[in-house]
Length: 626
Ligand SMILES: [Zn+2]
Image (cartoon, rainbow, N blue to C red; front, top):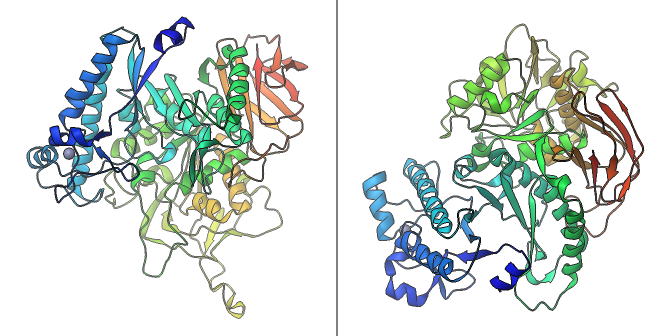
């Protein structure tokens, strides 16, 4: 097979599994396997005749290398990939002899019952675990290169915004990021794949990222041997390409009885191949950064006051998802910036940094944001951002109190229905709210004391009963507690919302809160206009890249009844989109081409701005400016 592929100039990656091994191996090498606290080995839940291997054992440091070397000797493969490993979730607790020894000698203590980041022993273990991942990754990469210098080892990452292992640290050993992000289920919004692309870009910064699309029907019920709908698979592949990742498309088994997925892959890849140059990105043109708060999404839980309650299960990704949806509605171009990558060099290209409840924030990260604001950068932050350090220990005040212009006054309040924000004075952020003095309030908030010179634009109207109807009247109509703090210091504009308006917007679907977020993003950007402006109907996600041949504007059409639930059944084309696209000074554009529609578009260029109309977008359109 390898020889046949090589004759067709195809590269071949040997796909391996290092997570599980057979019972014979368990008998021969009991020390290779993970153990429960009673010493029993761990069978896989689905294929119960296979057992989990422990990555602190010689199975990873000696046996897998022996297998790689054997393959390298016999077949001209170009690299190795391990399914499922290392993954981005938290490490399991293993009680094998190796792990007990590590706990005893390196960590001090015995393995805890379960993964629990509030347990200092487990935290130390997870750090030791990450060091071992990096050690094994480097070792396997070196072994891959024994055959040829450009061969490599690729681990399996993914998990989108919910990754728990530090992606920044993993990116230090990964020369290639493979996102195992094959599809969606339940209430996952369709943009989950583009969001994965943004997450991976935030740490890979231009290095290769692949994303695996399952051609099969993976959802909350899995069918490995029937295809998912062509529209769903196509939009997943489109998001992969738009966000700057390389699509992988796969099926399991060599004799498929369902062949419907083949046309989906063939047609997308042939289109991609005929336009390949336009997907060679040099840099994103966005000048708006969204801080990807990986620590908070992985570990944060809000404090639960005696009276409050959360509706349904708490999801720490709701803060970012609420902001994300507002950014799509407002048609903003943006990049994710990883919280562990806030250097002046990284932030230099961004006019504003948006921080959706980065509750767990290191001292160094607070310092980086302070310096960014001092250099004239603008900041929008919400709720408990910087209230805890990376271990979840609460600070006396926000780490960013100086930037926010606000100090925390004690416990977090809520969650509560029926709180409000009163418009105290009209401002750019209240644009579009002309018919009302009241706006919906955040479900939870930190009571704060603001610096005296910040104008009171929105005040908090505290909770009053929403039931029974006879009791529904405000007890305090006027307070001076700020619901937002808006400050301007030279070029730097700061907006801090003590409430969780991003999360409240997401869980409630409230449109006022989304508009307030969009207005505030526009305000922090100030005079700095977006590098590409797209006007028209529909909910779309946009990416703008400088490419090898010129520029590319990607438009993903999410306007669909299945945008947030169920597979996409068919597409609903959106009408004309008016685009203004800014290019580098001195450049002249000679062709504006719609790559999906396969035709050139009329355009005008005035100074740095190229203007054109995209007549329609069915699933996805890429406009190449050359
Ligand atoms: Zn172990």
